[in-house]
Length: 79
Image (cartoon, rainbow, N blue to C red):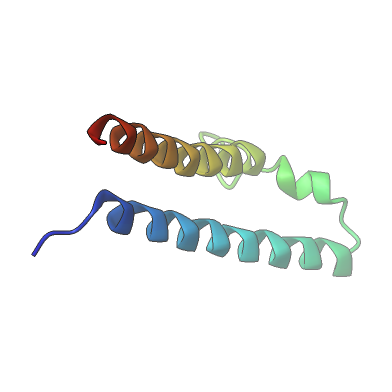
């Protein structure tokens, strides 16, 4: 059985980004109910050696973007 690069990566990226969106929405709701400035949560870290949340979100988006670019570039060279 063969599986395309698209089916192996794009649905995973979509699901990951949707999950991340839901987590961020829950965090925004939490900040609103607790009267916390959202920038405090965005700039926070769970551990001192971690990137802040904003950087982690950027990395997740960059990975999904690079996967799409890689697949489209590989596809265009095969045609």
